[in-house]
Amino acid sequence: MAVSVEELADAMYELVTEYAGKKKLKASDIVKEMISKYGDEVDKEQGKEAIRCLMDSERCVYTYFGGTYIELPHKEGAEPE
Amino acid sequence: MSDSKSPILDELEKGPWPSFVTEIKKAAEKSPMAQGLLEQLELSYKEKRTHWKHGGIVGVKGYGGGIIGRYSDASDKFPEVAHFHTVRVNQPSGWFYTADALRELMAIWEKHGSCLTNFHGSTGDTVFLGTKTSELEDIFTELSEKGWDLGGSGSDVRTPSCCVGPARCEFACYDTLSLTYDLTMSYQDELHRPFFPYKWKFKMAGCPNDCVASIARSDFSIIGTWKDAIQMDGEAVKEYVADANFNIQKFVVNKCPSKCISWDGKELEIDNKNCVRCMHCINVMPKALRPGKEKGATLLIGAKAPIVEGAQLASVLVPFMEMKPPYQELKDLLAAIWEFWDENGVARERIGECIQRVGLGNFVEQIGLKPIPQMVMQPRDNPYIFYEEYLEEE
Image (cartoon, rainbow over all chains, first blue to last red; front, side, top):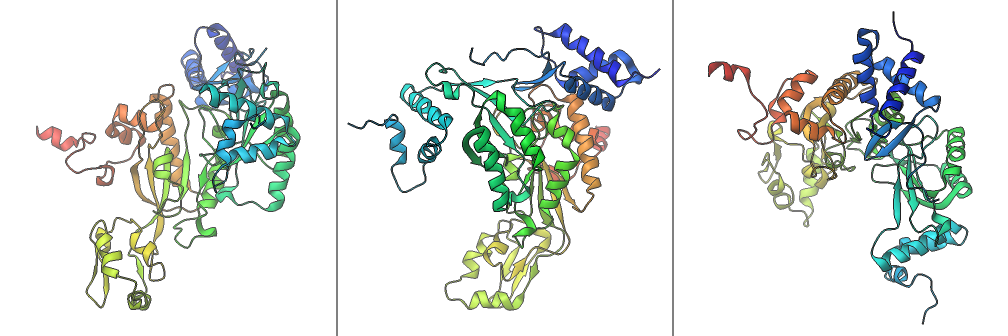
């Protein structure tokens, strides 16, 4: 049975949570991980849709540290107190 | 002794040229942020070090690009610039604005930012310099309501940009403005939702003069060219020659890099098969010579400035492609290249670096192009291409 975009976004959120503070994940890393988890049930376009869902729900944010990553929202380290 | 708060910066106002210090001072008359910037900059000049910190999170909801976070590490001294984020606004193709459009942008920026701008950033965007995190969503909403959008930043398609093209230039071999608009609209997701290993820059140049320096400054450079012969108006050639100050041998023939142009005292001849489209003769005699009639573009790939690795110029990928809407052939090629980059690229690796690492031969094979001589920079000196027939013989 195909995985819905919402389910995929949930799985992505779990993955980002698991890696929080350990490794920064790029959008393509997350999608590749989902493809290896769900196999043919997921393709890259669905992965992109799920990332959109994840961002629009504000459970994750884009961050830029050299390249762009997807992380849990957190306080900006550089922001003055 | 001067009671100026910025004696070092004041030095940069001397001389006959425009001064960014003067412009910041003008903005400071109505913007406390601009005044704070001036004072922090004076301190940086005095201490010979920056007081900016790069922010990594700020943005607007749903977008992964368009805002560049900047904070002061001296916010106790300069609270006005504690936040000083940059907003990149997607510029119109060819940088054509109406006065009303500019007023519209400035009204938004005066309300929410420092009043300081950069027309334009090196990628091409209209750049708003200096605002607070709390203002970002309002800026974005107001820009959107007026039909503007943010540009790219981070690991995404950066705001595509082009030369003025056929709007003002008779040498344009394709409609750069139309292609830029089309790519911008076609790749909205790629522009606003970073998915690549690193940045991707498009630049569209209408002719080989490459006024936007796409060959040096874009990952994917689309330079107008022609397939057939240079168009020549014999009468106009004679008019040039009749001018006593014009030496056709010295100014044109001797400067042809491939020596494909000759003048026998009566007629100008061009060996078009050996023309490398340098544009020199056309630039010197624009009334007599013009690009050919069979027009399109050469696609080049891999240029970049030195960040992670050294600078690279772009290499030819496709010598000639017709550039007409809906640009499907171009878009199919882009899809293949992005798929390759997604599979093979590592974090912060530009496409040019990725191609260097895996080899041009592997790259062209994977995107479905055949190796051709135009991809080879120097004959018999390129290790990238291996012909299978040759290997079989061994």
